[in-house]
Image (tube, rainbow, N blue to C red; front, side):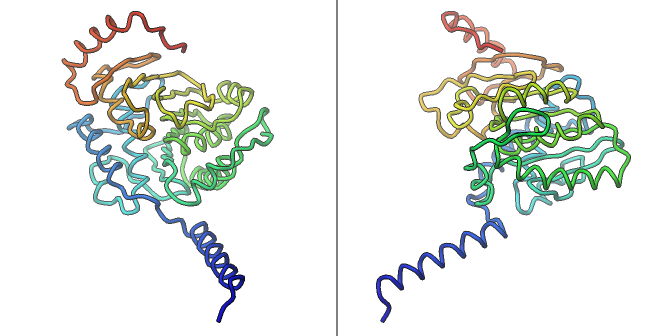
Amino acid sequence: MFSKRDVLIILLSVSLVAVVMAYIKPYPLFDCSQTLSELAILNEILGDSRGVPTNFNYVSQRKLAWLLKGVYLSELVSFKCEAQSFELSLSSIPQGHAGVHNDVLFVFLRRSKTLSDFAHDALVYRREHTSGGRVYAGPARLAEEVKLRVASILEEHKINHLVITGVSLGGAIGTLVAEAFAEKLDVSLILFNSFQIGDQVFRQAAEEKISRIFHVKNICDTYSCPIDARIGTPLYFDKRANSKSDHHCKIASLLRALGSGEQIKEMSFYFSDECRTDTEDEKAQEQTEEENEHMSPLKL
């Protein structure tokens, strides 16, 4: 018979092996139902429009939806069927996928999805960065693998423009990757609800180096808002609701609330309903602005 001590040692050993195996071969901690529902909204926004956007001097609803679709496709373990309507051929890289169109390299970096991802999310201590300031250890460690893969793609193709986009952890990783290549290439960085982007000194240095940065963010997101992550041109949404939970990666509805404007620069936007037509959006926005006159505007 095993003693209590032997049983405890066996259980601890099994747990340790399970954690190590999960780290070596990451396993998704949740299904893709939310991702698929987000893709459905994005496909609705994109409609029949075709073509790969390459000019990111400004962003539009379609550009943001197209980029976010690429990120969500990177979350799926088997995305071939879902990716058939995507104009860009994607290949796997650490933490996401990449694709080349003419002289533009697109890098799509997913949110936290595996045990390994969440383990790196938990590494909240900061370490010195070569460009100045301090960065979070978890995203910095994952970014090293992405940098190596991006560097190898740049050797294989003639690339002049690098477009990096990511959600949550993917955005933090993407910022580090964008900063690393910003002196060699024209770089566009588009973030969705990202945090852990380093301290203010690092973010200011990154802004000076990276050609353009847009940060789409739900300011009611209880996951990312406690950490200061102000960087680039803000597109901030105030999603007023009774509960602030479960908003972290539901971003497609935010983009639908934008309407179909061709150019978006810098904005703060209040809204309450997630499912409205463009015409209803305009009326609702006017009504919301009247109702919220007492509210202090967001500081951009």
